[in-house]
Image (cartoon, rainbow, N blue to C red):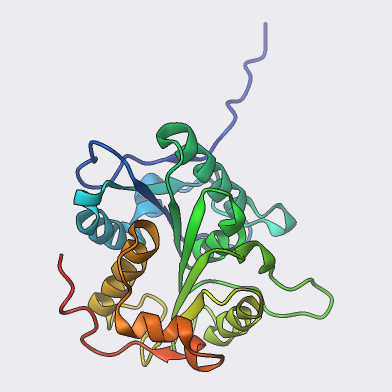
Length: 253
C-alpha cells in the first residue's frame, strides 16, 4: 500500500480586510505575534486577534486610495532560532503581494514577534515602510550577533513601544532603533508612557499614529507634525518621542 505524503504546510494571506478596492495601489501586511520556539500551526483566529483592530483601522482609512490590508498566516508559530521562520513567512508574503498586485508599495506592520519579523524582512524590494508595535527582540548577548539593521536602509521605519511593557523590553527596541538610525535617517520611535505590552491604555492614539505613518509612506500624504519631528530629531530625541494623549483626533477617518 502506497504511503500518503504529508501535506507541506505553507504560509498564506488572509482575505483582504474591509472592502477590497477596485484597484490596489498599496498593501499593508499584518504580522501577528508568535513565540520563540514552536512548530505548531497557529489557528486563523489566534493569528488575526492581535492585529484585527489595526487592520480594520488601516483598511477603512485607505479604502479610497486603493489600500489592501492582509493578515499573514504563518506556517508555524515559532521563530525557531536561526531559521527565523516568521521573517521568512513575511518575505514570502511580500513576494505574494507582487504576484497578486504587481509593483505596489508595501508596509510590513507587526506586533510582538511579528514586529521582529517585519524588521528582519524590511529589506524586501517591495517594502516601502516598516511599523513595529511592541516588538519582541532577543536579549543582547556578546556571543550572539546583534539584530540586523542594514536591510532597513532606504525604508521608513517606525517603532512604537509602551514604557511599562513587561513582556518585551522597550530598551531593546530603543537600542535597535539607535543602531538603525546611524545608517538610515528615516527611523523614528515613539514611547507610549505608562502603557503596557498590548498598548490598550492609549489604543486610539496608537491606531491614529499607525494610520498617519501608513498613509504617509504608501501614498505620499504629509506626516503629522509629531511624526515629522520624530524623523527629523537627532538621537536620542527622535527615538524617545512621547506619544501625546489625544494624538490623531483631528485626523480624518
